[in-house]
Image (tube, rainbow, N blue to C red; front, top):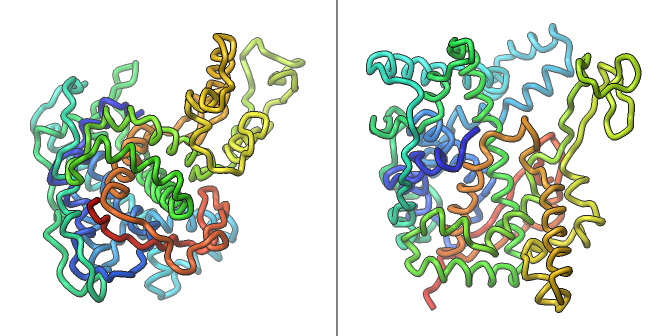
Length: 446
Protein backbone atom coordinates (compact mmCIF):
# COMPACT_ATOMS: atom_id res chain seq x y z
CA UNK A 1 0.00 0.00 0.00
CA UNK A 2 1.25 3.48 -0.88
CA UNK A 3 0.60 5.56 2.23
CA UNK A 4 -0.08 9.27 2.41
CA UNK A 5 3.31 9.80 4.05
CA UNK A 6 5.25 8.04 1.32
CA UNK A 7 3.15 9.64 -1.42
CA UNK A 8 4.09 13.10 -0.24
CA UNK A 9 7.81 12.30 -0.37
CA UNK A 10 7.73 11.06 -3.96
CA UNK A 11 9.50 12.94 -6.71
CA UNK A 12 6.18 14.04 -8.19
CA UNK A 13 6.34 16.90 -5.70
CA UNK A 14 9.85 17.99 -6.60
CA UNK A 15 10.30 21.17 -8.66
CA UNK A 16 12.13 19.80 -11.68
CA UNK A 17 9.91 16.78 -12.06
CA UNK A 18 6.61 18.62 -11.74
CA UNK A 19 7.48 21.42 -14.13
CA UNK A 20 8.73 18.80 -16.58
CA UNK A 21 5.53 16.82 -16.23
CA UNK A 22 3.48 19.85 -17.23
CA UNK A 23 5.79 21.01 -20.02
CA UNK A 24 3.17 20.56 -22.78
CA UNK A 25 1.29 23.52 -21.34
CA UNK A 26 4.22 25.76 -22.37
CA UNK A 27 4.01 24.78 -26.04
CA UNK A 28 4.11 27.85 -28.22
CA UNK A 29 2.33 25.93 -30.95
CA UNK A 30 -1.05 25.47 -29.26
CA UNK A 31 -3.81 27.05 -31.29
CA UNK A 32 -6.45 29.27 -29.74
CA UNK A 33 -9.14 26.69 -30.37
CA UNK A 34 -7.16 23.46 -30.55
CA UNK A 35 -8.99 20.63 -28.76
CA UNK A 36 -6.85 18.35 -26.63
CA UNK A 37 -7.77 14.74 -25.95
CA UNK A 38 -7.45 14.73 -22.18
CA UNK A 39 -7.59 10.94 -22.06
CA UNK A 40 -4.28 10.95 -23.90
CA UNK A 41 -2.87 13.97 -22.06
CA UNK A 42 -3.57 12.63 -18.58
CA UNK A 43 -2.60 9.07 -19.56
CA UNK A 44 0.91 10.28 -20.39
CA UNK A 45 1.04 12.49 -17.31
CA UNK A 46 -0.11 9.64 -15.04
CA UNK A 47 2.46 7.26 -16.49
CA UNK A 48 5.26 9.77 -15.92
CA UNK A 49 4.14 10.17 -12.31
CA UNK A 50 3.80 6.43 -11.66
CA UNK A 51 7.19 5.70 -13.20
CA UNK A 52 8.74 8.53 -11.17
CA UNK A 53 7.16 7.44 -7.89
CA UNK A 54 7.93 3.77 -8.47
CA UNK A 55 11.49 3.89 -9.77
CA UNK A 56 12.77 7.45 -9.49
CA UNK A 57 13.03 7.47 -13.26
CA UNK A 58 12.18 10.25 -15.71
CA UNK A 59 10.31 8.60 -18.55
CA UNK A 60 9.36 11.76 -20.45
CA UNK A 61 6.15 10.28 -21.90
CA UNK A 62 4.33 13.59 -21.75
CA UNK A 63 7.24 15.32 -23.49
CA UNK A 64 6.79 12.93 -26.40
CA UNK A 65 3.04 13.57 -26.33
CA UNK A 66 3.74 17.30 -26.62
CA UNK A 67 5.73 16.65 -29.79
CA UNK A 68 3.11 14.22 -31.10
CA UNK A 69 5.67 11.42 -30.86
CA UNK A 70 4.66 7.90 -29.88
CA UNK A 71 5.78 6.49 -26.54
CA UNK A 72 5.84 2.71 -26.85
CA UNK A 73 5.42 2.11 -23.12
CA UNK A 74 2.28 4.25 -22.98
CA UNK A 75 0.92 2.43 -26.03
CA UNK A 76 1.76 -0.94 -24.47
CA UNK A 77 -0.09 -0.11 -21.26
CA UNK A 78 -3.15 0.89 -23.28
CA UNK A 79 -2.88 -2.28 -25.37
CA UNK A 80 -2.34 -4.72 -22.53
CA UNK A 81 -6.03 -5.12 -21.52
CA UNK A 82 -7.03 -5.48 -25.19
CA UNK A 83 -4.35 -8.12 -25.61
CA UNK A 84 -5.72 -10.05 -22.65
CA UNK A 85 -9.27 -9.99 -23.99
CA UNK A 86 -8.21 -11.02 -27.49
CA UNK A 87 -5.93 -13.81 -26.29
CA UNK A 88 -8.63 -15.25 -24.01
CA UNK A 89 -11.26 -15.34 -26.77
CA UNK A 90 -9.35 -17.06 -29.58
CA UNK A 91 -7.66 -20.49 -29.71
CA UNK A 92 -3.95 -20.63 -28.97
CA UNK A 93 -3.09 -21.49 -32.58
CA UNK A 94 -5.08 -18.49 -33.81
CA UNK A 95 -3.35 -16.19 -31.33
CA UNK A 96 0.07 -17.43 -32.42
CA UNK A 97 -0.94 -16.78 -36.02
CA UNK A 98 -2.12 -13.25 -35.22
CA UNK A 99 1.22 -12.49 -33.58
CA UNK A 100 3.06 -13.45 -36.76
CA UNK A 101 1.16 -11.01 -38.99
CA UNK A 102 3.73 -8.48 -40.30
CA UNK A 103 1.87 -5.38 -39.15
CA UNK A 104 3.75 -2.92 -36.92
CA UNK A 105 0.71 -1.77 -34.93
CA UNK A 106 -0.50 -5.33 -34.39
CA UNK A 107 2.95 -6.40 -33.25
CA UNK A 108 2.93 -3.66 -30.61
CA UNK A 109 -0.36 -5.01 -29.28
CA UNK A 110 0.86 -8.62 -29.26
CA UNK A 111 4.12 -7.61 -27.58
CA UNK A 112 2.58 -5.21 -25.05
CA UNK A 113 3.35 -7.53 -22.14
CA UNK A 114 6.95 -7.95 -23.29
CA UNK A 115 7.43 -4.20 -23.71
CA UNK A 116 6.24 -3.54 -20.16
CA UNK A 117 8.18 -6.46 -18.70
CA UNK A 118 11.38 -5.35 -20.40
CA UNK A 119 11.03 -1.79 -19.11
CA UNK A 120 10.25 -2.89 -15.55
CA UNK A 121 12.92 -5.61 -15.54
CA UNK A 122 15.55 -3.06 -16.53
CA UNK A 123 14.51 -0.75 -13.70
CA UNK A 124 14.50 -3.65 -11.22
CA UNK A 125 17.95 -4.88 -12.16
CA UNK A 126 19.34 -1.33 -12.12
CA UNK A 127 17.91 -0.68 -8.67
CA UNK A 128 19.01 -4.07 -7.32
CA UNK A 129 22.56 -3.41 -8.49
CA UNK A 130 22.52 0.04 -6.90
CA UNK A 131 21.15 -1.25 -3.60
CA UNK A 132 23.73 -4.02 -3.49
CA UNK A 133 26.55 -1.63 -4.33
CA UNK A 134 25.53 0.90 -1.71
CA UNK A 135 24.47 -1.74 0.84
CA UNK A 136 21.41 0.26 1.81
CA UNK A 137 19.79 -1.41 4.83
CA UNK A 138 16.11 -2.31 4.89
CA UNK A 139 13.67 -1.09 5.89
CA UNK A 140 14.40 2.57 5.15
CA UNK A 141 12.55 5.03 7.39
CA UNK A 142 10.12 7.47 5.84
CA UNK A 143 11.04 11.13 6.35
CA UNK A 144 8.71 12.74 8.90
CA UNK A 145 8.94 16.27 7.50
CA UNK A 146 6.89 16.80 4.37
CA UNK A 147 7.81 19.80 2.27
CA UNK A 148 5.03 21.77 0.60
CA UNK A 149 4.30 21.25 -3.04
CA UNK A 150 6.93 23.38 -4.82
CA UNK A 151 6.06 26.72 -6.31
CA UNK A 152 7.65 25.61 -9.58
CA UNK A 153 4.66 23.36 -10.21
CA UNK A 154 2.81 25.93 -12.25
CA UNK A 155 5.68 28.12 -13.41
CA UNK A 156 4.88 27.21 -17.00
CA UNK A 157 1.27 28.30 -17.01
CA UNK A 158 1.72 32.07 -17.48
CA UNK A 159 3.71 31.39 -20.68
CA UNK A 160 0.91 29.38 -22.24
CA UNK A 161 0.37 30.74 -25.74
CA UNK A 162 -1.70 29.90 -28.77
CA UNK A 163 -0.74 29.72 -32.41
CA UNK A 164 -1.22 27.45 -35.38
CA UNK A 165 -0.57 23.85 -34.30
CA UNK A 166 0.54 21.88 -31.29
CA UNK A 167 3.95 20.96 -32.64
CA UNK A 168 4.80 24.00 -34.74
CA UNK A 169 7.58 25.05 -32.37
CA UNK A 170 9.91 23.08 -30.13
CA UNK A 171 8.69 22.09 -26.72
CA UNK A 172 10.61 23.41 -23.75
CA UNK A 173 13.37 21.29 -22.37
CA UNK A 174 11.91 18.35 -20.50
CA UNK A 175 13.44 15.46 -18.66
CA UNK A 176 15.10 12.81 -20.77
CA UNK A 177 14.17 9.17 -20.78
CA UNK A 178 17.52 7.90 -19.54
CA UNK A 179 17.89 10.15 -16.50
CA UNK A 180 17.22 9.24 -12.90
CA UNK A 181 16.56 11.32 -9.83
CA UNK A 182 19.06 12.21 -7.17
CA UNK A 183 20.14 9.44 -4.86
CA UNK A 184 18.95 11.17 -1.70
CA UNK A 185 15.31 10.73 -2.77
CA UNK A 186 15.49 7.02 -3.60
CA UNK A 187 14.34 6.03 -0.14
CA UNK A 188 10.75 6.96 -0.87
CA UNK A 189 10.30 5.12 -4.18
CA UNK A 190 8.20 1.98 -4.39
CA UNK A 191 10.78 -0.27 -6.06
CA UNK A 192 13.52 -0.24 -3.38
CA UNK A 193 10.87 -0.88 -0.75
CA UNK A 194 9.70 -3.98 -2.61
CA UNK A 195 13.26 -5.17 -3.15
CA UNK A 196 14.08 -4.70 0.54
CA UNK A 197 10.86 -6.27 1.80
CA UNK A 198 11.20 -9.50 3.75
CA UNK A 199 8.54 -12.10 4.46
CA UNK A 200 8.08 -13.32 8.06
CA UNK A 201 10.42 -16.22 7.29
CA UNK A 202 13.17 -13.74 6.37
CA UNK A 203 13.09 -14.37 2.64
CA UNK A 204 13.00 -11.45 0.22
CA UNK A 205 10.36 -11.08 -2.46
CA UNK A 206 11.36 -12.91 -5.68
CA UNK A 207 12.27 -10.48 -8.42
CA UNK A 208 9.64 -12.05 -10.69
CA UNK A 209 7.02 -11.03 -8.12
CA UNK A 210 8.48 -7.54 -7.89
CA UNK A 211 8.34 -7.18 -11.67
CA UNK A 212 4.75 -8.42 -11.76
CA UNK A 213 3.75 -6.02 -8.97
CA UNK A 214 5.35 -3.04 -10.71
CA UNK A 215 3.68 -3.91 -14.01
CA UNK A 216 0.36 -4.08 -12.20
CA UNK A 217 0.87 -0.61 -10.74
CA UNK A 218 1.49 0.88 -14.19
CA UNK A 219 -1.52 -0.80 -15.78
CA UNK A 220 -3.88 -0.10 -12.88
CA UNK A 221 -2.98 3.55 -12.37
CA UNK A 222 -2.59 5.02 -15.84
CA UNK A 223 -5.92 4.85 -17.67
CA UNK A 224 -7.94 5.02 -14.45
CA UNK A 225 -6.40 8.37 -13.53
CA UNK A 226 -6.81 9.83 -17.01
CA UNK A 227 -10.43 8.66 -17.26
CA UNK A 228 -11.51 10.14 -13.94
CA UNK A 229 -9.75 13.48 -14.50
CA UNK A 230 -11.24 13.75 -18.00
CA UNK A 231 -14.78 13.16 -16.75
CA UNK A 232 -14.26 15.59 -13.86
CA UNK A 233 -13.26 18.40 -16.23
CA UNK A 234 -15.97 17.54 -18.76
CA UNK A 235 -18.59 17.72 -16.00
CA UNK A 236 -17.36 21.21 -15.11
CA UNK A 237 -17.79 22.40 -18.71
CA UNK A 238 -21.54 21.99 -18.26
CA UNK A 239 -21.91 22.88 -14.58
CA UNK A 240 -20.85 26.48 -14.14
CA UNK A 241 -22.50 26.55 -10.70
CA UNK A 242 -20.10 23.89 -9.43
CA UNK A 243 -17.15 25.50 -11.21
CA UNK A 244 -17.80 28.85 -9.49
CA UNK A 245 -17.78 27.24 -6.04
CA UNK A 246 -14.59 25.35 -6.80
CA UNK A 247 -12.93 28.48 -8.17
CA UNK A 248 -13.88 30.51 -5.10
CA UNK A 249 -12.28 27.91 -2.85
CA UNK A 250 -9.20 27.40 -5.04
CA UNK A 251 -8.54 31.11 -5.60
CA UNK A 252 -8.75 31.76 -1.85
CA UNK A 253 -5.93 29.32 -1.04
CA UNK A 254 -3.95 29.94 -4.22
CA UNK A 255 -3.64 33.70 -4.78
CA UNK A 256 -0.50 33.12 -6.84
CA UNK A 257 -1.47 30.92 -9.81
CA UNK A 258 2.12 29.70 -10.07
CA UNK A 259 2.33 28.48 -6.46
CA UNK A 260 0.41 25.33 -5.62
CA UNK A 261 -0.61 25.10 -1.95
CA UNK A 262 0.78 22.50 0.42
CA UNK A 263 -0.93 19.13 -0.01
CA UNK A 264 -2.24 19.42 3.55
CA UNK A 265 -4.14 22.53 2.48
CA UNK A 266 -5.51 20.74 -0.58
CA UNK A 267 -6.66 17.84 1.58
CA UNK A 268 -8.54 20.29 3.80
CA UNK A 269 -10.50 21.99 1.01
CA UNK A 270 -14.08 21.02 1.81
CA UNK A 271 -15.73 21.65 -1.55
CA UNK A 272 -12.83 20.18 -3.55
CA UNK A 273 -13.07 17.03 -1.44
CA UNK A 274 -16.83 16.87 -1.99
CA UNK A 275 -16.37 17.37 -5.74
CA UNK A 276 -13.84 14.53 -5.96
CA UNK A 277 -16.04 12.18 -3.92
CA UNK A 278 -19.01 12.90 -6.15
CA UNK A 279 -16.85 12.55 -9.25
CA UNK A 280 -15.60 9.15 -8.10
CA UNK A 281 -19.16 8.12 -7.26
CA UNK A 282 -20.46 8.74 -10.77
CA UNK A 283 -17.26 8.51 -12.80
CA UNK A 284 -15.13 5.99 -10.95
CA UNK A 285 -12.92 4.42 -13.59
CA UNK A 286 -13.34 0.79 -12.48
CA UNK A 287 -17.05 0.16 -11.81
CA UNK A 288 -17.05 -3.44 -13.02
CA UNK A 289 -17.43 -6.77 -11.24
CA UNK A 290 -14.59 -7.85 -8.99
CA UNK A 291 -14.85 -11.63 -8.89
CA UNK A 292 -13.76 -13.92 -6.07
CA UNK A 293 -14.08 -17.70 -5.62
CA UNK A 294 -15.34 -19.22 -2.38
CA UNK A 295 -12.50 -21.42 -1.08
CA UNK A 296 -12.74 -24.68 0.80
CA UNK A 297 -13.25 -22.96 4.10
CA UNK A 298 -11.67 -23.76 7.42
CA UNK A 299 -13.82 -21.14 9.12
CA UNK A 300 -16.52 -21.97 11.62
CA UNK A 301 -18.87 -19.77 9.61
CA UNK A 302 -20.34 -22.70 7.70
CA UNK A 303 -23.71 -23.43 6.14
CA UNK A 304 -23.80 -27.21 5.99
CA UNK A 305 -20.75 -29.44 5.78
CA UNK A 306 -18.65 -27.38 3.38
CA UNK A 307 -20.52 -24.23 2.37
CA UNK A 308 -19.76 -20.68 3.42
CA UNK A 309 -22.48 -18.53 4.92
CA UNK A 310 -22.68 -14.95 3.67
CA UNK A 311 -25.47 -12.89 5.24
CA UNK A 312 -27.60 -16.01 5.56
CA UNK A 313 -26.93 -17.33 2.07
CA UNK A 314 -25.17 -20.68 1.72
CA UNK A 315 -22.29 -20.51 -0.76
CA UNK A 316 -20.52 -23.82 -1.50
CA UNK A 317 -16.79 -23.91 -2.32
CA UNK A 318 -16.05 -22.94 -5.90
CA UNK A 319 -18.92 -20.44 -6.08
CA UNK A 320 -17.96 -17.24 -7.91
CA UNK A 321 -19.08 -14.16 -6.01
CA UNK A 322 -18.59 -10.56 -6.97
CA UNK A 323 -19.57 -7.01 -6.26
CA UNK A 324 -19.23 -3.83 -8.26
CA UNK A 325 -19.23 -0.12 -7.65
CA UNK A 326 -21.69 0.94 -10.37
CA UNK A 327 -24.84 -0.22 -8.55
CA UNK A 328 -23.59 0.57 -5.06
CA UNK A 329 -22.82 4.15 -6.11
CA UNK A 330 -26.30 4.56 -7.58
CA UNK A 331 -28.45 3.14 -4.80
CA UNK A 332 -31.26 5.71 -4.41
CA UNK A 333 -31.79 4.66 -0.80
CA UNK A 334 -28.27 5.85 -0.03
CA UNK A 335 -27.77 8.53 -2.69
CA UNK A 336 -31.03 10.40 -3.41
CA UNK A 337 -31.26 11.50 -7.06
CA UNK A 338 -28.36 9.14 -7.81
CA UNK A 339 -27.79 10.28 -11.40
CA UNK A 340 -27.46 13.94 -10.36
CA UNK A 341 -23.92 15.26 -9.93
CA UNK A 342 -24.25 16.92 -6.53
CA UNK A 343 -21.06 17.56 -4.54
CA UNK A 344 -23.15 19.21 -1.81
CA UNK A 345 -24.48 15.81 -0.76
CA UNK A 346 -21.05 15.19 0.82
CA UNK A 347 -21.00 18.41 2.86
CA UNK A 348 -21.98 18.25 6.54
CA UNK A 349 -23.45 21.72 6.13
CA UNK A 350 -25.78 20.66 3.30
CA UNK A 351 -28.73 19.66 5.46
CA UNK A 352 -28.18 22.66 7.73
CA UNK A 353 -28.33 25.00 4.74
CA UNK A 354 -31.78 23.63 3.93
CA UNK A 355 -32.94 24.14 7.52
CA UNK A 356 -33.19 20.41 8.18
CA UNK A 357 -30.91 20.33 11.23
CA UNK A 358 -32.68 21.47 14.37
CA UNK A 359 -31.07 19.68 17.30
CA UNK A 360 -28.48 17.11 18.29
CA UNK A 361 -30.67 14.25 17.06
CA UNK A 362 -30.72 15.78 13.59
CA UNK A 363 -26.95 16.23 13.70
CA UNK A 364 -26.55 12.56 14.61
CA UNK A 365 -28.75 11.58 11.69
CA UNK A 366 -26.66 13.77 9.38
CA UNK A 367 -23.46 12.13 10.62
CA UNK A 368 -25.05 8.72 10.05
CA UNK A 369 -26.08 9.76 6.53
CA UNK A 370 -22.55 10.78 5.62
CA UNK A 371 -21.13 7.60 7.15
CA UNK A 372 -23.59 5.45 5.21
CA UNK A 373 -22.67 7.11 1.93
CA UNK A 374 -18.99 6.61 2.68
CA UNK A 375 -19.57 2.92 3.43
CA UNK A 376 -21.18 2.45 -0.01
CA UNK A 377 -18.27 4.06 -1.86
CA UNK A 378 -15.77 1.69 -3.45
CA UNK A 379 -14.19 3.45 -6.46
CA UNK A 380 -10.86 1.85 -5.50
CA UNK A 381 -12.29 -1.47 -4.36
CA UNK A 382 -12.58 -2.39 -0.70
CA UNK A 383 -11.15 -4.63 1.97
CA UNK A 384 -7.74 -6.28 1.82
CA UNK A 385 -7.68 -6.00 -1.99
CA UNK A 386 -8.27 -2.25 -2.08
CA UNK A 387 -6.16 -0.33 -4.59
CA UNK A 388 -2.66 0.21 -3.24
CA UNK A 389 -2.30 3.49 -5.12
CA UNK A 390 -5.44 5.25 -3.90
CA UNK A 391 -3.58 7.81 -1.78
CA UNK A 392 -1.29 8.76 -4.64
CA UNK A 393 -4.32 8.94 -6.95
CA UNK A 394 -6.09 11.36 -4.59
CA UNK A 395 -3.03 13.58 -4.44
CA UNK A 396 -2.64 13.60 -8.22
CA UNK A 397 -6.31 14.48 -8.71
CA UNK A 398 -6.15 17.38 -6.27
CA UNK A 399 -2.93 18.85 -7.64
CA UNK A 400 -4.00 18.56 -11.29
CA UNK A 401 -7.49 19.97 -10.66
CA UNK A 402 -6.31 23.05 -8.77
CA UNK A 403 -3.52 23.61 -11.31
CA UNK A 404 -5.89 23.52 -14.26
CA UNK A 405 -8.83 25.38 -12.71
CA UNK A 406 -6.68 28.14 -11.23
CA UNK A 407 -5.08 28.85 -14.60
CA UNK A 408 -7.54 27.85 -17.31
CA UNK A 409 -11.06 28.14 -18.52
CA UNK A 410 -12.12 24.74 -19.82
CA UNK A 411 -14.53 24.31 -22.71
CA UNK A 412 -15.92 21.17 -24.31
CA UNK A 413 -14.81 20.88 -27.92
CA UNK A 414 -17.46 20.52 -30.65
CA UNK A 415 -18.57 16.92 -30.66
CA UNK A 416 -17.75 16.34 -27.00
CA UNK A 417 -21.20 15.89 -25.51
CA UNK A 418 -23.36 13.47 -23.56
CA UNK A 419 -23.46 11.06 -26.49
CA UNK A 420 -19.69 10.98 -27.00
CA UNK A 421 -19.08 10.79 -23.24
CA UNK A 422 -21.66 8.07 -22.61
CA UNK A 423 -19.95 5.52 -20.38
CA UNK A 424 -18.90 2.17 -21.82
CA UNK A 425 -17.73 -0.73 -19.68
CA UNK A 426 -14.53 -2.50 -20.67
CA UNK A 427 -13.73 -3.45 -17.07
CA UNK A 428 -12.39 0.07 -16.83
CA UNK A 429 -14.82 2.69 -18.04
CA UNK A 430 -14.30 4.61 -21.29
CA UNK A 431 -16.38 7.27 -23.07
CA UNK A 432 -18.20 6.01 -26.14
CA UNK A 433 -16.02 8.13 -28.43
CA UNK A 434 -12.85 6.73 -26.78
CA UNK A 435 -11.67 10.32 -26.36
CA UNK A 436 -12.49 13.45 -24.39
CA UNK A 437 -11.61 16.58 -26.33
CA UNK A 438 -11.52 19.79 -24.33
CA UNK A 439 -10.23 23.29 -25.08
CA UNK A 440 -8.13 25.19 -22.53
CA UNK A 441 -8.11 29.01 -22.47
CA UNK A 442 -5.81 30.89 -20.07
CA UNK A 443 -7.83 32.64 -17.37
CA UNK A 444 -7.91 36.40 -17.60
CA UNK A 445 -6.89 38.01 -14.28
CA UNK A 446 -9.80 39.68 -12.56
